[in-house]
Each structure stands twice: as structure tokens, then as C-alpha cells.
Image 1 (cartoon, rainbow, N blue to C red):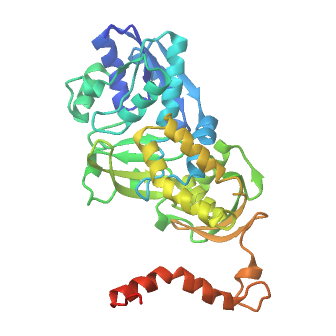
Image 2: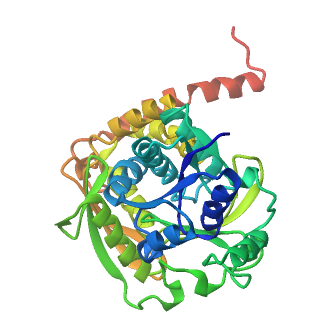
Image 3: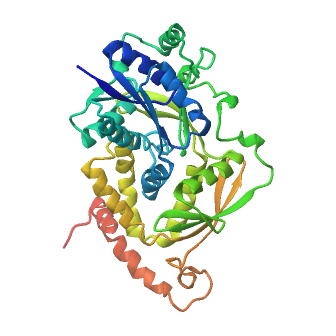
Length: 403
């Protein structure tokens, strides 16, 4: 493809460590290693030196934590995004942000190509490349997993040993992982048997629920226009709040998911996830919504959540339909302000209270005690009209005919 300089989305893991060296050998090009700091903490330690020692002409680490939390995670959670009922889209929502800054860096460095470490079987190749198309349609894209003759991660491990490249994956722990501020995911290797329970020592963000504290912890989360803004009365930035909830939730073993999901390319895949802070956010958000959102607005919004979530999962973050849906989702959040009180205990996150100055819950109407604002005898006519079509259908089935 006549590539002179490529910006590689570089995590320092097995795949991208191999790809960096392979790009240089295959294309004779310069490689700029770009690492997005999305809150993966110690995984970034030494990554610049590693990239340079492997052959990169430059290594750029960009702190994107606040942008990730405030402009990608929070909008998705305002929409209650969830894929196939369980997955909170921690990897999916990160890819368009990485791609955005990868394209920016390509412009700044004068690169004519970008590259990623996604396999030809997975979803990430689509997420990255659809984002590239939307942001810079003329950029060249190198997807090594679709080009080289290596067929497995065992082949990659052998390549790394041949070239003296240090890698975090061994044959004893062959699963791959992806971590950011919202979650950590695990897939492949020993997890490919969906009957096999994950090794408890694998988890990083959460303790085993059985080993969590024996005493529950009560927390309160304040919301404004659908966004969490404070925990126990302390206001925080988006990233700080998510990090805090990760710590609290992880201590109580909250947010583990073991899921067999449907990939975009057509196959089923087993993924294991830890999303402690995100799980708490979702539960608290729906609690505040329950007393502040109009019933029919909620019904319409809920009908759009699966499609919105599918768009994120399938890589359409920068599409016109996603922009349209996000505006609708955010409009529904205008009244979502208040406080949720939660009990965290051994893997469970239970709502035990909710309040709001904008609450639509009015005890004077809902009470089972005596009231003077609701006439119960009016329900008779309401039910008759509501069920009129059912009554007519039953009469027709019994042979009733109009006279």
C-alpha cells in the first residue's frame, strides 16, 4: 500500500506488541505507537519504553480519562445502554474515542495510515474502522490479523520469543483482557469452554463476593439531568466519580458478568466482565428515573435502548442515527435529578431509597390510606372503556351478532 508512517493503537499487550514489529518488517515504515490512557492504571507502566525498544519512532500516551467518562460513558449510561441484557459495553464504548485521537495524531504526525490489533473474527475491527471512515475516510488502514500468516495467539507468542519482545500473556494464561476505567473484559483461551468457571484469581477490579465484607455499605448518589454528580454529598468530576464507584463496588464484589454474547460477525463468544462502578451507576440511575420520568416518555425511551446499545456494540458511534438517538435520550433526561440510596453487600447492589424535588411520585395519590384527591369509583368506567375491545372480541367468538 506504499505506507510511509502508521499510527498504531498500542496497548502493550500481546497482539499490538507483535504488530508493532511486524509493521516495520512488512512495510518498512515508521510506526508511532499511540496509547490512550482510559484509566487502565498500572498497565501503562513502562509502555513508552517498551514501544520504543520494539522499534517505534515515537510513543505517545494521551490522558483521555475525563473525556472517556464524561463524553462517552456518561452519555451511554444516560441512555441505560446495555447489550443483550447484561453487557454494559465497556470495550465497545472505548473504541470510538481511541479511533478519534488516533486520527488526530495521524494528522499531527503526518501519517498516511493507522493500524489496530483487532482480529478478523471480532467486533473491534468494525468499531475501529467505521470510526476511521467517519472521521477521515481517506486514511489507509492496516489490519494485521487479516493479512499475516499467523493463525493463533500461540503463533504470536512464538514470534515474540523470536524477536525478544516481552509480553503479558503466556501459555499458562492464554486469555486476553482489555481494561479501562469502566470495566475489564476477559475472553479466549481457557474461557472458550462456556461450561468452565473462570479462575477466581483472574479477576482484578472486584473481590470474590464470598470474600466481601460481612457488613453492608450504604451510599447515596446524586443525579442532575441524568448524570451522577456526587457520592455521599461530595461532588466529583466524571472520571473521579467513576473511579470512586469502582473502588467501592469492587470492595463488595459488585459487577461481575459471565456472558455468551452474539458478535456482529455472526458467531457466539463467551466474555467475562468486571464493571463495578458502572453497575452501581446503572442501578442508581434507574432508581432516580423511576420517580422523575414520565411513564410514556420512559416507555418510548425503553423501546429505543436495544437499538441504541446495538449501535454502540456494532461500531456506529459516529453515525447520523446515533447522533439523532443521543439527542432523544438526552431530552428524556432533562427531569432526571435526585438522589438514590443503595445498599452494597456481597455482590448485590440494592436500591433502598430514592428522592427528588422533581418527583412524580405523590403520596397523596398513591396512598392506600384515606385520601381526598382520588375517586376510586371512577375506575369503573376507566376499566370498561379500557377493556371494550376485549369484550367485543369475546362476544364475536361466542356467536354474538349485531341486531
